Length: 152
Image (cartoon, rainbow, N blue to C red):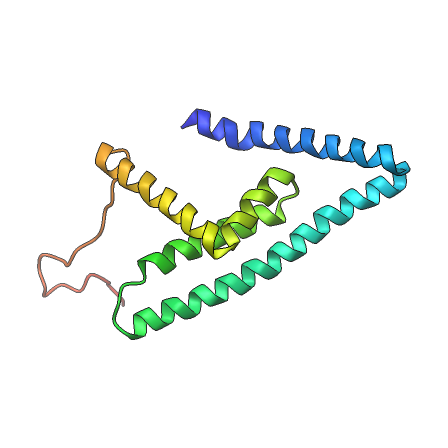
C-alpha cells in the first residue's frame, strides 16, 4: 500500500514535471520563450476545459442511464462503475500534466471506458477472491420492535 501511495504522490508528479519540461523545451526550440510559455499554459487550460466539458456531458448521460435502469427496476451496476470512472478521470483532467490528461481522456470516451471498467472489475474480483477486499453491509436489526434510528 505504501508503495502504491509513493507511486501516486511522488513518482507520477515527477514524471509529469519531466514531461512538461521536455515539451516546454521542444516548444522553446521552435518559438521564443514567451510564446513557448503561453503555448504550455494554453495546453493546460484547453485540456482542463475540454475535460470539464466531456466529464459533465458523460456524467449526465450516465446519470440518465442510471435513472432509467432504476425506474425499470434493474440494478445499475455498470452505470455506477462508469460514474466513478468518469468522476476520477474528470479529476485527472483538471490536474495539470500529460500522463493524467491521457488517462483522464481515456476514461471519458465510452469504448475506452468499457476497457477500464473491465480492468476495474477484474481487479475487484481478484481482490475479493484473495481476501484483500471485503464487503461489509448492514442487515436488518435482529429485534424488529426496535427502531434502528433513535430520534427524540
